[in-house]
Image 1 (cartoon, rainbow, N blue to C red):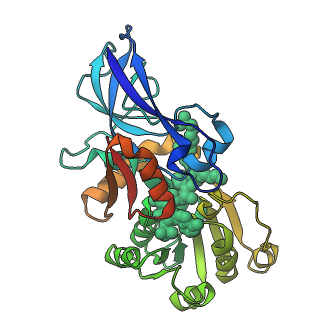
Image 2 (image 1 turned 45 degrees about the vertical axis):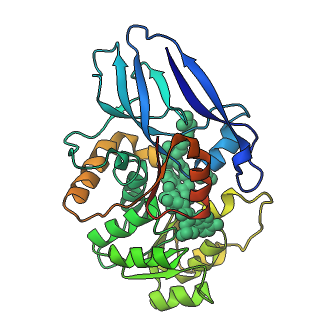
Image 3 (image 1 turned 90 degrees about the horizontal axis):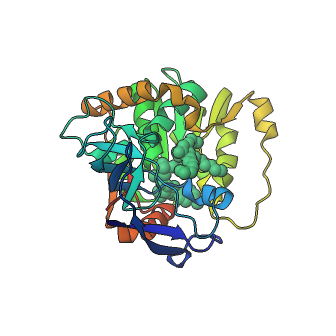
Length: 329
Ligand SMILES: NC(=O)C1=CN([C@@H]2O[C@H](COP(=O)(O)OP(=O)(O)OC[C@H]3O[C@@H](n4cnc5c(N)ncnc54)[C@H](OP(=O)(O)O)[C@@H]3O)[C@@H](O)[C@H]2O)C=CC1
Ligand SMILES: CCCCCC(=O)/C=C/[C@H]1[C@H](O)CC(=O)[C@@H]1CCCCCCC(=O)O
């Protein structure tokens, strides 16, 4: 008999999440039935979406949503061998039972030397978000200028590097000087700390005096309201995330975006990466190749211990991570 630990949402977040909003619970798992597998979480992901989705979809007492790389410990399903690793969507739990339907194998040819945790980051959902957001929403073209915020994070760091591979100039904004140094190291043409510049408008203008063709927006709010005024004619804005708004209790008003949208004839599109579920194989294959060729660099912010899931989640929302925020169970 295996006893799993799980983190539940004890109390819906009000404003910024607190550790007291979470509770740990123990779950005794039953013996496996035919067709089932027992899995152990090895790496767990903490992601910004957990904040708005918990508000919309979860009840107090529910196990926190989330994905993990898990190892198969026991199998009564011939399609899955003991010792193999899969990506699962089983929430914040140390162990769980699955019938295999919701599990994804790591991409074929995953090199032994490559950390499996990357399947939650650069070679996983965040990397795919960068890939499809740039190709299908921004429709970037060589020679264009791409702006990305939360640029040193899981999605943003891949956006910048893919835009460079695509022959674009890349400007990135992030919330610390260490993050800015990291962006320069991985090839961003321009990068600045949006928290310390005296004027965001001036910093954006200095980084690209001719403006921006593509804006990959992970942040929304005031940043987006300012950046939209520096889009070039026929510019494209990929509305990927709005992290500046996830912890805000009172909805904010304007500024209103219609005037720059009309004058510059902009396209602004929200998207959810699962729209391209039928092309995940293509995206993961491309990302894995670039990583193995050294064209896309990966960084992870690893928190040790399942006990620290809430702290890791809160730390990511506060901006403590460079690259993908991961918990090693
Ligand atoms: N549409 C889709 O399908 C998907 C959307 N997303 C969205 O992409 C965005 C980035 O996600 P992900 O790469 O996983 O996360 P990150 O790894 O980028 O981590 C979050 C980062 O957001 C920044 N941040 C936090 N609060 C604020 C704030 N108030 N203002 C500005 N920046 C802030 C911090 O960086 P800093 O220090 O630079 O402030 C922090 O490190 C999120 O908005 C997320 O919801 C992610 C995946 C899929
Ligand atoms: C205003 C909210 C914007 C959130 C944007 C975002 O970060 C979206 C992330 C999704 C991504 O595109 C694909 C996902 O897996 C994220 C959503 C996950 C939903 C969780 C569903 C519940 C579960 O896992 O059981």
